[in-house]
Length: 131
Image 1 (cartoon, rainbow, N blue to C red):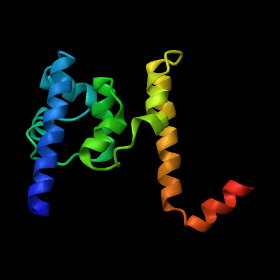
Image 2 (cartoon, rainbow, N blue to C red):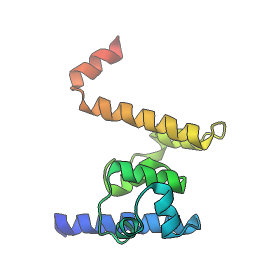
Image 3 (tube, rainbow, N blue to C red):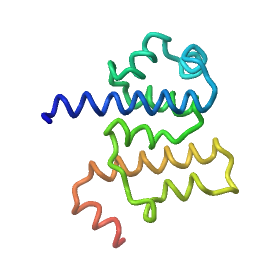
């Protein structure tokens, strides 16, 4: 399978996953599109694997579906899947003492720090850790 076929398969898998989550949440395409702030045709194209949504659109869809944006980021290939035992995000999402909005906020802040750290040179990160 070449890179183009792999990308096409990944898009279909992402779209299928979003469709499954929408169905499980008992939402129509129209309702989910309205809640996510996208058009019906655009959401339909995402679900059929014809469009690659941006991280912002994925975040809006995740919020509307009340699922982790990280889950959609992994499905879209934006983030790499991590081992659940070592995953802080999984722990945050599983914490029964937090409200859903608090969980999402913590996850988003954490992921933004991780993205920032990934952009820093290794020497800077090592220096900061020892200070």
